[in-house]
Length: 124
Length: 214
Image 1 (cartoon, each protein chain N blue to C red):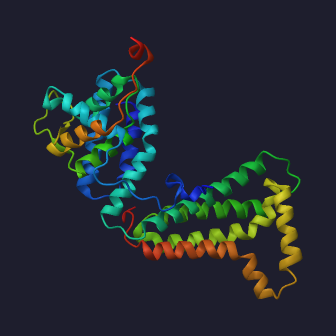
Image 2 (image 1 turned 90 degrees about the vertical axis):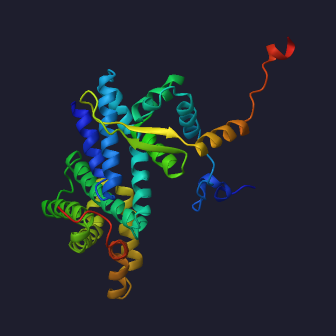
Image 3 (image 1 turned 30 degrees about the horizontal axis):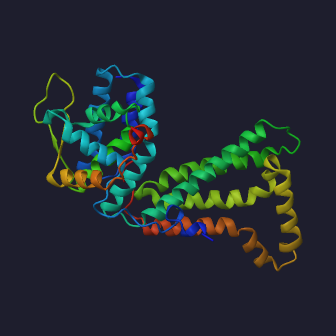
Protein backbone atom coordinates (compact mmCIF):
# COMPACT_ATOMS: atom_id res chain seq x y z
CA UNK A 1 0.00 0.00 0.00
CA UNK A 2 1.26 3.45 -0.86
CA UNK A 3 1.59 5.67 2.21
CA UNK A 4 0.89 9.35 1.71
CA UNK A 5 4.40 10.38 2.75
CA UNK A 6 5.83 8.31 -0.07
CA UNK A 7 4.07 10.49 -2.65
CA UNK A 8 6.55 13.24 -3.47
CA UNK A 9 3.93 16.00 -3.64
CA UNK A 10 3.00 15.37 -0.02
CA UNK A 11 6.49 14.75 1.28
CA UNK A 12 7.82 17.25 3.79
CA UNK A 13 11.26 16.83 2.27
CA UNK A 14 10.14 17.27 -1.31
CA UNK A 15 13.29 17.68 -3.42
CA UNK A 16 13.74 20.88 -5.37
CA UNK A 17 13.29 20.84 -9.12
CA UNK A 18 16.24 19.38 -11.04
CA UNK A 19 18.39 21.91 -12.84
CA UNK A 20 17.57 21.99 -16.52
CA UNK A 21 13.90 21.04 -16.19
CA UNK A 22 11.38 23.68 -17.22
CA UNK A 23 7.83 24.22 -16.06
CA UNK A 24 5.04 24.50 -18.65
CA UNK A 25 4.81 28.26 -18.03
CA UNK A 26 8.56 28.67 -18.57
CA UNK A 27 8.42 26.64 -21.77
CA UNK A 28 5.59 28.82 -23.04
CA UNK A 29 7.55 31.97 -22.21
CA UNK A 30 10.56 30.62 -24.10
CA UNK A 31 8.44 29.75 -27.12
CA UNK A 32 6.70 33.13 -27.14
CA UNK A 33 10.10 34.79 -26.85
CA UNK A 34 11.50 32.81 -29.76
CA UNK A 35 8.43 33.60 -31.87
CA UNK A 36 8.56 37.34 -31.07
CA UNK A 37 9.48 39.30 -34.21
CA UNK A 38 10.87 42.42 -32.58
CA UNK A 39 13.40 42.07 -29.79
CA UNK A 40 12.11 45.24 -28.08
CA UNK A 41 8.62 43.84 -27.68
CA UNK A 42 9.43 41.08 -25.20
CA UNK A 43 8.78 42.67 -21.81
CA UNK A 44 6.61 41.89 -18.78
CA UNK A 45 3.17 43.04 -19.90
CA UNK A 46 3.65 41.94 -23.52
CA UNK A 47 4.61 38.47 -22.28
CA UNK A 48 1.44 38.34 -20.14
CA UNK A 49 -0.55 39.33 -23.23
CA UNK A 50 1.17 36.74 -25.43
CA UNK A 51 0.51 34.01 -22.86
CA UNK A 52 -3.17 34.98 -22.69
CA UNK A 53 -3.62 34.33 -26.42
CA UNK A 54 -4.39 30.68 -25.66
CA UNK A 55 -7.68 31.83 -24.17
CA UNK A 56 -6.51 32.21 -20.55
CA UNK A 57 -6.62 35.51 -18.72
CA UNK A 58 -3.50 37.60 -18.22
CA UNK A 59 -0.95 35.82 -16.04
CA UNK A 60 -0.89 37.04 -12.43
CA UNK A 61 1.84 39.56 -11.58
CA UNK A 62 3.48 37.32 -8.97
CA UNK A 63 3.41 34.20 -11.14
CA UNK A 64 4.85 35.96 -14.19
CA UNK A 65 7.65 37.93 -12.53
CA UNK A 66 8.66 35.04 -10.31
CA UNK A 67 9.00 32.83 -13.40
CA UNK A 68 10.94 35.51 -15.30
CA UNK A 69 13.27 36.08 -12.35
CA UNK A 70 13.93 32.34 -12.04
CA UNK A 71 14.59 32.03 -15.79
CA UNK A 72 17.08 34.92 -15.74
CA UNK A 73 18.87 33.28 -12.80
CA UNK A 74 18.94 29.97 -14.69
CA UNK A 75 20.47 31.65 -17.77
CA UNK A 76 17.47 30.94 -20.01
CA UNK A 77 16.73 34.63 -20.47
CA UNK A 78 18.65 37.88 -20.23
CA UNK A 79 17.05 41.07 -18.94
CA UNK A 80 18.02 44.66 -19.77
CA UNK A 81 16.32 47.89 -18.76
CA UNK A 82 15.48 50.35 -21.54
CA UNK A 83 17.92 53.23 -21.41
CA UNK A 84 15.73 55.94 -22.96
CA UNK A 85 12.33 57.07 -21.72
CA UNK A 86 9.82 56.72 -24.56
CA UNK A 87 6.54 58.70 -24.70
CA UNK A 88 6.68 59.44 -20.98
CA UNK A 89 5.87 55.84 -20.02
CA UNK A 90 7.83 53.92 -17.36
CA UNK A 91 10.80 52.13 -18.88
CA UNK A 92 10.43 48.48 -19.75
CA UNK A 93 12.62 45.55 -18.81
CA UNK A 94 13.35 43.82 -22.10
CA UNK A 95 13.95 40.08 -22.05
CA UNK A 96 15.74 37.96 -24.63
CA UNK A 97 15.97 34.18 -24.95
CA UNK A 98 19.57 32.99 -24.63
CA UNK A 99 21.19 30.16 -26.55
CA UNK A 100 20.67 27.93 -23.51
CA UNK A 101 17.02 28.96 -23.39
CA UNK A 102 16.59 28.05 -27.05
CA UNK A 103 18.21 24.64 -26.52
CA UNK A 104 16.16 23.90 -23.40
CA UNK A 105 12.94 24.84 -25.22
CA UNK A 106 13.82 22.57 -28.14
CA UNK A 107 14.67 19.65 -25.84
CA UNK A 108 11.59 20.13 -23.66
CA UNK A 109 9.34 20.23 -26.70
CA UNK A 110 10.96 17.10 -28.13
CA UNK A 111 10.57 15.27 -24.80
CA UNK A 112 6.85 15.98 -24.63
CA UNK A 113 4.63 13.04 -25.64
CA UNK A 114 3.16 13.40 -29.12
CA UNK A 115 -0.66 13.66 -29.22
CA UNK A 116 -2.34 10.41 -30.20
CA UNK A 117 -3.73 10.41 -33.77
CA UNK A 118 -7.43 11.04 -33.88
CA UNK A 119 -9.82 8.22 -34.75
CA UNK A 120 -10.84 10.08 -37.89
CA UNK A 121 -7.23 10.33 -39.13
CA UNK A 122 -6.52 6.69 -38.25
CA UNK A 123 -9.52 5.38 -40.17
CA UNK A 124 -9.05 7.65 -43.18
CA UNK B 1 -3.43 56.04 -11.27
CA UNK B 2 -6.33 53.94 -9.96
CA UNK B 3 -6.78 52.91 -6.36
CA UNK B 4 -6.11 49.26 -7.14
CA UNK B 5 -2.82 50.16 -8.86
CA UNK B 6 -1.83 52.04 -5.70
CA UNK B 7 -2.72 48.97 -3.65
CA UNK B 8 -0.60 46.75 -5.91
CA UNK B 9 2.35 49.14 -5.54
CA UNK B 10 1.91 49.26 -1.75
CA UNK B 11 1.80 45.48 -1.68
CA UNK B 12 4.98 45.37 -3.77
CA UNK B 13 6.71 47.80 -1.39
CA UNK B 14 5.63 45.58 1.50
CA UNK B 15 6.95 42.27 0.17
CA UNK B 16 10.18 43.77 -1.15
CA UNK B 17 10.79 45.87 1.98
CA UNK B 18 13.94 44.19 3.28
CA UNK B 19 15.33 42.62 0.14
CA UNK B 20 18.62 43.77 -1.41
CA UNK B 21 18.14 47.25 -2.96
CA UNK B 22 18.65 46.27 -6.61
CA UNK B 23 16.34 43.25 -6.39
CA UNK B 24 13.60 45.33 -4.73
CA UNK B 25 14.00 48.27 -7.13
CA UNK B 26 13.87 45.98 -10.19
CA UNK B 27 10.66 44.33 -9.04
CA UNK B 28 8.99 47.65 -8.17
CA UNK B 29 9.94 49.30 -11.44
CA UNK B 30 8.87 46.28 -13.47
CA UNK B 31 5.49 46.23 -11.77
CA UNK B 32 5.03 49.99 -12.30
CA UNK B 33 5.67 49.43 -16.01
CA UNK B 34 3.24 46.50 -16.11
CA UNK B 35 0.47 48.48 -14.39
CA UNK B 36 0.99 51.38 -16.78
CA UNK B 37 0.91 49.15 -19.87
CA UNK B 38 -2.12 47.26 -18.59
CA UNK B 39 -4.01 50.51 -18.04
CA UNK B 40 -2.90 51.89 -21.41
CA UNK B 41 -4.21 48.72 -23.09
CA UNK B 42 -7.63 49.34 -21.52
CA UNK B 43 -7.30 46.87 -18.66
CA UNK B 44 -10.11 47.10 -16.12
CA UNK B 45 -9.72 47.57 -12.38
CA UNK B 46 -11.13 44.07 -11.86
CA UNK B 47 -8.55 42.57 -14.21
CA UNK B 48 -5.66 44.30 -12.39
CA UNK B 49 -7.07 43.20 -9.02
CA UNK B 50 -7.39 39.61 -10.23
CA UNK B 51 -3.78 39.53 -11.43
CA UNK B 52 -2.63 41.02 -8.14
CA UNK B 53 -4.55 38.67 -5.83
CA UNK B 54 -3.85 35.52 -7.87
CA UNK B 55 -0.12 36.32 -7.73
CA UNK B 56 0.18 36.89 -3.97
CA UNK B 57 1.32 33.33 -3.11
CA UNK B 58 4.02 33.56 -5.80
CA UNK B 59 5.08 37.00 -4.53
CA UNK B 60 5.56 35.55 -1.06
CA UNK B 61 7.46 32.48 -2.21
CA UNK B 62 9.66 34.68 -4.44
CA UNK B 63 10.34 36.94 -1.44
CA UNK B 64 11.24 33.91 0.68
CA UNK B 65 13.63 32.67 -2.01
CA UNK B 66 15.26 36.10 -2.35
CA UNK B 67 15.72 36.36 1.42
CA UNK B 68 17.26 32.90 1.48
CA UNK B 69 19.56 33.87 -1.38
CA UNK B 70 20.63 37.01 0.49
CA UNK B 71 21.78 34.83 3.39
CA UNK B 72 19.06 35.60 5.96
CA UNK B 73 19.40 33.06 8.78
CA UNK B 74 16.55 31.40 10.67
CA UNK B 75 14.01 32.48 8.07
CA UNK B 76 11.74 29.45 8.35
CA UNK B 77 11.46 29.67 12.12
CA UNK B 78 10.98 33.43 11.95
CA UNK B 79 8.09 33.01 9.47
CA UNK B 80 6.53 30.30 11.67
CA UNK B 81 6.71 32.61 14.70
CA UNK B 82 5.12 35.44 12.72
CA UNK B 83 2.27 33.17 11.58
CA UNK B 84 1.75 31.98 15.15
CA UNK B 85 1.63 35.56 16.44
CA UNK B 86 -0.85 36.48 13.68
CA UNK B 87 -3.00 33.48 14.71
CA UNK B 88 -2.98 34.71 18.31
CA UNK B 89 -4.26 38.10 17.16
CA UNK B 90 -6.88 36.45 14.91
CA UNK B 91 -7.99 34.20 17.78
CA UNK B 92 -8.41 37.18 20.15
CA UNK B 93 -10.44 39.09 17.56
CA UNK B 94 -12.57 36.00 16.78
CA UNK B 95 -13.40 35.44 20.45
CA UNK B 96 -14.34 39.11 20.90
CA UNK B 97 -16.59 39.02 17.83
CA UNK B 98 -18.19 35.77 18.99
CA UNK B 99 -18.83 37.34 22.35
CA UNK B 100 -20.33 40.49 20.81
CA UNK B 101 -22.70 38.45 18.63
CA UNK B 102 -23.77 35.86 21.22
CA UNK B 103 -25.87 35.98 24.38
CA UNK B 104 -24.16 37.75 27.24
CA UNK B 105 -24.92 35.09 29.83
CA UNK B 106 -21.28 34.59 30.76
CA UNK B 107 -20.21 38.15 30.25
CA UNK B 108 -17.47 39.42 32.55
CA UNK B 109 -16.29 42.89 31.69
CA UNK B 110 -12.90 42.36 33.33
CA UNK B 111 -12.27 39.18 31.31
CA UNK B 112 -13.36 40.88 28.11
CA UNK B 113 -11.06 43.85 28.75
CA UNK B 114 -8.17 41.52 29.55
CA UNK B 115 -8.77 39.67 26.29
CA UNK B 116 -8.91 42.94 24.34
CA UNK B 117 -5.67 44.08 26.01
CA UNK B 118 -3.95 40.75 25.27
CA UNK B 119 -5.04 40.94 21.63
CA UNK B 120 -3.75 44.51 21.35
CA UNK B 121 -0.44 43.54 22.98
CA UNK B 122 -0.14 40.57 20.59
CA UNK B 123 -0.74 42.85 17.58
CA UNK B 124 1.86 45.37 18.78
CA UNK B 125 4.23 42.50 19.61
CA UNK B 126 3.84 41.08 16.10
CA UNK B 127 4.64 44.47 14.51
CA UNK B 128 7.72 44.91 16.73
CA UNK B 129 8.84 41.30 16.29
CA UNK B 130 8.86 41.88 12.51
CA UNK B 131 11.49 44.63 12.87
CA UNK B 132 15.00 43.52 13.67
CA UNK B 133 15.80 46.46 15.99
CA UNK B 134 12.60 46.05 18.04
CA UNK B 135 12.48 42.25 18.10
CA UNK B 136 13.46 41.83 21.76
CA UNK B 137 10.62 44.10 22.92
CA UNK B 138 8.35 42.28 20.48
CA UNK B 139 9.23 38.94 22.10
CA UNK B 140 8.43 40.36 25.55
CA UNK B 141 5.04 41.63 24.32
CA UNK B 142 4.23 38.32 22.58
CA UNK B 143 5.23 36.41 25.74
CA UNK B 144 2.82 38.48 27.84
CA UNK B 145 0.07 37.96 25.26
CA UNK B 146 0.73 34.20 24.96
CA UNK B 147 0.58 33.66 28.72
CA UNK B 148 -2.50 35.88 29.01
CA UNK B 149 -4.26 33.93 26.24
CA UNK B 150 -3.24 30.71 27.96
CA UNK B 151 -4.80 31.96 31.19
CA UNK B 152 -7.93 33.32 29.53
CA UNK B 153 -8.68 30.28 27.37
CA UNK B 154 -10.55 28.43 30.11
CA UNK B 155 -12.73 31.45 30.82
CA UNK B 156 -13.46 32.81 27.36
CA UNK B 157 -13.65 29.36 25.79
CA UNK B 158 -17.30 29.20 26.81
CA UNK B 159 -17.98 32.07 24.41
CA UNK B 160 -16.69 29.93 21.56
CA UNK B 161 -17.40 26.27 22.31
CA UNK B 162 -19.16 24.69 25.30
CA UNK B 163 -18.09 21.20 24.32
CA UNK B 164 -14.35 21.77 24.02
CA UNK B 165 -14.10 24.16 26.94
CA UNK B 166 -16.04 21.70 29.09
CA UNK B 167 -13.62 18.92 28.16
CA UNK B 168 -10.63 21.16 28.84
CA UNK B 169 -11.98 22.24 32.22
CA UNK B 170 -12.72 18.63 33.20
CA UNK B 171 -9.18 17.64 32.19
CA UNK B 172 -7.69 20.43 34.31
CA UNK B 173 -9.88 19.61 37.31
CA UNK B 174 -9.49 15.81 37.19
CA UNK B 175 -5.89 15.37 36.05
CA UNK B 176 -3.94 18.54 36.77
CA UNK B 177 -5.36 19.92 39.99
CA UNK B 178 -4.49 16.88 42.14
CA UNK B 179 -0.82 17.24 41.14
CA UNK B 180 1.70 19.21 43.19
CA UNK B 181 1.14 22.93 42.53
CA UNK B 182 4.40 23.68 40.63
CA UNK B 183 3.85 20.70 38.30
CA UNK B 184 0.20 21.61 37.73
CA UNK B 185 1.12 25.23 36.98
CA UNK B 186 3.78 24.21 34.48
CA UNK B 187 1.36 21.85 32.74
CA UNK B 188 -1.46 24.41 32.68
CA UNK B 189 0.85 27.03 31.20
CA UNK B 190 2.69 24.58 28.94
CA UNK B 191 1.10 25.79 25.67
CA UNK B 192 1.95 29.42 26.50
CA UNK B 193 5.49 28.45 27.56
CA UNK B 194 6.08 26.46 24.38
CA UNK B 195 4.87 29.33 22.22
CA UNK B 196 7.10 31.71 24.17
CA UNK B 197 10.09 29.40 23.65
CA UNK B 198 9.41 29.42 19.91
CA UNK B 199 9.35 33.25 19.83
CA UNK B 200 12.63 33.45 21.76
CA UNK B 201 14.43 30.88 19.59
CA UNK B 202 13.09 32.51 16.40
CA UNK B 203 14.27 35.93 17.59
CA UNK B 204 17.76 34.64 18.43
CA UNK B 205 18.17 32.74 15.16
CA UNK B 206 16.85 35.50 12.89
CA UNK B 207 18.55 38.57 14.32
CA UNK B 208 19.13 40.15 10.92
CA UNK B 209 15.82 39.36 9.22
CA UNK B 210 13.43 42.27 8.69
CA UNK B 211 13.64 46.06 8.35
CA UNK B 212 15.38 48.11 11.01
CA UNK B 213 13.48 51.36 10.63
CA UNK B 214 9.97 52.14 11.76
